Image 1 (spheres, helix red, strand yellow):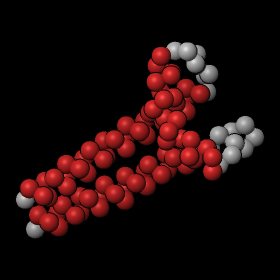
Image 2: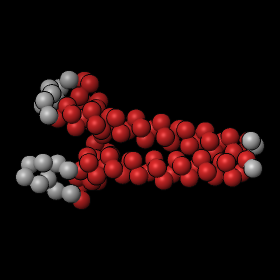
Image 3: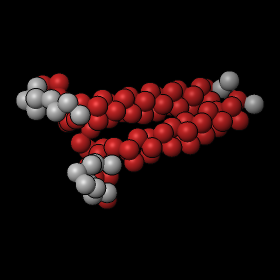
Length: 99
């Protein structure tokens, strides 16, 4: 495999790792919202600071329905779509360059 193909494989790995981390952080926030944690807890504040920039655009597009916020579902589906489309495309590109 050439250097450029290795670089693309490394980028695919990093993108996959970041998207997976984002997915789990958002999922943890959703699960924590069911137990209404202390908003002054440093862990909760950090979790909100990490996820608010990701969730806010979806919250603007999708208003709460009956008090239920569906924006995390849309964001989680979007993350999975990007993982499937972008990461697999990068892997295929690297394989194509290598041969």
